[in-house]
Image (tube, rainbow over all chains, first blue to last red; front, side, top):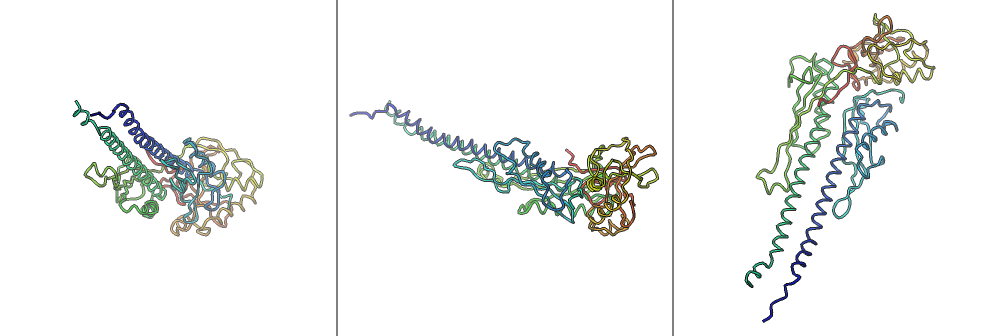
Length: 140
Length: 295
């Protein structure tokens, strides 16, 4: 009676184990990275909204001027999130009672890598802050 | 010996399964903890916005206190859509250090608000490990009107004299078109108490027309007094301007909010402290103020 050859079976088992665990581990890492990026984005847009809310606002309507937008964008970009560019940042002003009342900053078109591909953040994360700066009148 | 070897068969599968289970459990724990932290951050952000919105309305009057409550509720409702389990309580105080009152007896000294927000967080993967299905999430934040020592923007290029009259002459040199823009945009340089403001020749026609333009850009261009302006509640604050008060040597002694009076040349009524971003006066009777979250 011959015994089955067992030599090499440990190697095969190790290889199979590695083949299963490695993608799970890498997927977990990618998921964690995506989560950290999203969280950093949330912090960055909050920072942008709070900074912009204290700025002089020199537009007569809900569309901010180029300078105002640029300042808010710079505040968001200050967080140095890899891949985040100016065109991903949307800045708007909400009016209430005929005056600026709330700054909103959101991310749009930014891609976050997740296991198996990438998801595009469209309008999120977003942050808002009640406007508390000086509304200058030259645009009216 | 052979029996031992046969018993070892399948142990790798078991080990892999155990590893997988531990990794998935670890991932689940990480996901839930991160979601919990994100929920806490979002709740704190909402609470800060509500506190700032409320404090912007405090002007030392019972109406201001009521407006603060209404605006806080509106802000909360608008930004917590779908989060029906979120609630908040609001308290008011005369300083960021408290004491805090949910129903203050008087409104004349109130310049700060404290928001306590509550929410419940639904566990997903951790639900299989702990007995609770939800966890409470809380955030407490304070905001207050704080004094501005150095006015960077929004200061009208005129000065109020010791007797309360608008002094002749600009506080910056400007050509007619620049005069108009300086009145509309404010002084292009910062000013603080103690600075001496020079007097430059007036451009009477441009000044009068631009001040009237400023008045017309207000949603309430007709109220003749601040009491009327505030009672009507229509104004958007364009007529409410920040001016420096100077002594005989044109040294700035204080700042205050003034309401431009329609139909008169360079006439303004002193209304109290100036609060940036508000269409009403600050709670304080003098000075330039801004609204800040107190950390």
